[in-house]
Image (cartoon, rainbow, N blue to C red; front, top):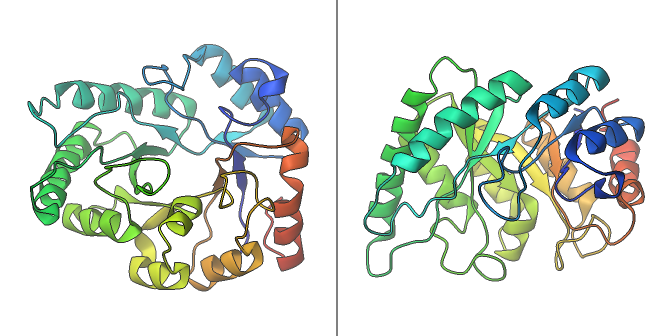
Length: 270
């Protein structure tokens, strides 16, 4: 199995200018995919995009936008629980994704509500996402739910383990809803990747990577990337891999270690 690497153009190739310029720079560096955060920049640190120019760059280069973030960021479990902004945002996001040829929108769970059972909050969240899927039906967009670590980056988050995201995804029970496995967040939470993948099966619809500790490019931390990609292959994952890290060196240079690892494994898509 081979994987397309998708640099995050919020973090990589920023030295080349605006977002559409970053797409062209990624293409020049040999990438056929990219990812980004929110398209309209409602949530910092994402910034507004010139969507027409971005679309032109994607079409001109043949680069595929693999994923974008849902907007606005919403605290689903915190009163007064008005989700109308989220629902309007997911409809707008789906229209933008369809126009840009992006197949995935990344969603998250927000902060948990202290003193309330976790399972009750999972079930409520599943209901919210079920409604969101109804609103984007027919768009061709898949929603992928990301768990983020609470130990370092997101204190108080409701979904801090991949198992939490899987629980919600199973309750939603739709082929248009899956899980984003972020290797960095998983590692920070001390998850066993092989066990996580065994539990997840086909529910993993997207993967992102950064090294840990530090969230730099692969090769700057302690994660065994050859073992990681052997585990992904063994689990049957053959989709794209988002590069969502904070580079410590120029963008193209920051990708060399992981590209070399995948090339050695025969797993780097061309």
